[in-house]
Image (cartoon, rainbow, N blue to C red; front, top):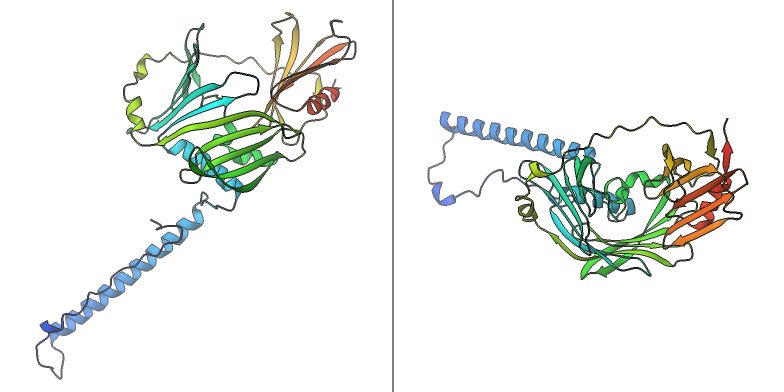
Length: 366
């Protein structure tokens, strides 16, 4: 076990000599017992020396093997620590989601590792009818008003905090740059501030504050390209305590809804592609959707960089829209354009200019 970052481990080889006990007269020749005692002591010292060397070598090897050594001067190291702590600690977090012009949404988030190794996570919206998600290992159960509860396979709950930030921050390095800004005080706790910006300036920026003591998230701001605040997640209470597991000890796991058997349709290969995508953004899914408003069938593609998801719809032009349509609701952007033959619609938490570039880059591949 390492003591501190690079702690020292010492062993006491021999205790102090009690001179009052040494009263025998000196002898010119050592006795057989003395020789055996000296030999035994030398062998013991040699053994201890070998043990120390082995332990030191094992410690050195462990240090070299460990990939999770925390570097307080590295922004990505802070994010990797956040991901580790999120899955390892027992905690209860209260936070609010603030979107300018909308009502504040309060959430309760709990996580615990039970004595049998089971991981249980809970996310609840506390206002209105609300909703509640409960994850037991790799099964997520969803409870929302107006719909029957169901369960599905998943290793995390889908909430307002981006999945990649909490679980796979390393994959964001293809798309974003991370910068340590400085220390601050959030919710009465010392915090490290980190700035996240897209490499090609095509996506919104983020500022987040991580608790210095626990590594947990305390605050997350999303900013537009003009610096305007678009969305904020603010932690109001953070409790890291093994006793959080007691809350889940009463959970009747057998009463959770059964996992639904979802058969994914085969991926449809569209005859078009985008020649422009933000750096690091990749196609995730292709499908056919029937639009709820018009009832029309549209070809659908989902793109993601791990932090942001963008949906693209292509359908036959209806003649309803004669010019481009630009809608914005907080961070969410909807851009639709037509060339008289097809209607292209881009939806996602991206700047309008990025949505326009994506829509204009449609290219027929067959």
